[in-house]
Length: 336
Ligand code: SAM
Ligand code: SF4
Ligand code: SF4
Image (cartoon, rainbow, N blue to C red; front, side, top):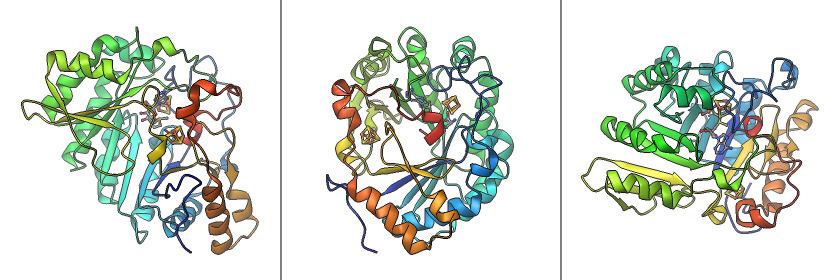
């Protein structure tokens, strides 16, 4: 099968695999606790893809050009036997890189087995080193300490360089960003600040809570001088800077103020087996249903290629014109 490009000539390169829609945190910007309470109905187990099914679909996506896989969620480490999935995915011919995004709270115990199964890198989300701020942001579900223990375990296991993601919200954690930058610089972790995004419909997003990437960089630069870096590759989302004293790099993901749809090569697979061609998609296309109805690999590949070829998504570029905000898919559901 030739490798498809979409309507804007963007190739398919990355697949983000959400392995569960559940999470042990309740970050207000993603799964606010008042919506995702004890009675909230997550996707029933039988509708969630089994690991063999995920691997089969990933292999098909690799046949269409995907070279990078990222395991995400929900929280990927709450899914049982996740090491087995890593093992399967890293054995797919043609995959160059398998990574995971996690909140890190359960990482300490599984970092080494994950590495042994072939996981090259982890990105750990950590919004603040200030324990009160951190707890407020994650719905009171965890302290900073276990996340740091998870990061250290990943480092010991050799999953380096460690990447740290931090969502910045004005008036919530923006006063702690320089501390986090200094900590990551001292430890050699690559920090990526993410502008607070209007994903889904349930996080109460307001533009005035977004701290623009430019301001984030200015605030770090004032304390820890920076200079811009060229991007590593086509489709890189982070705008990178390096510390002038040679102490590593930092990046900002300016999805709100400086969208990067033009180079977006990412496809998302939800835990229940639908593909989404944009983080802000209104709906996905199920691959699980045809797969469970007996479709062949060629048939599934044709569906996937067809969806990609029709793709016209550039939500972040047209955000201000976008009014149909009531039906967007939630981020924990399709993965970040
Ligand atoms: N549970 C894992 C975690 O938190 O790393 C993986 C899934 S989470 C949805 C993936 C990433 O999306 C995290 O780094 C998280 O901070 C980010 N994220 C979630 N909601 C966001 C929002 N509204 N704006 C910006 N980033 C967001
Ligand atoms: Fe869970 Fe990650 Fe969403 Fe936080 S950002 S609620 S850790 S899925
Ligand atoms: Fe890609 Fe959609 Fe994000 Fe644009 S808004 S960068 S198309 S996921």
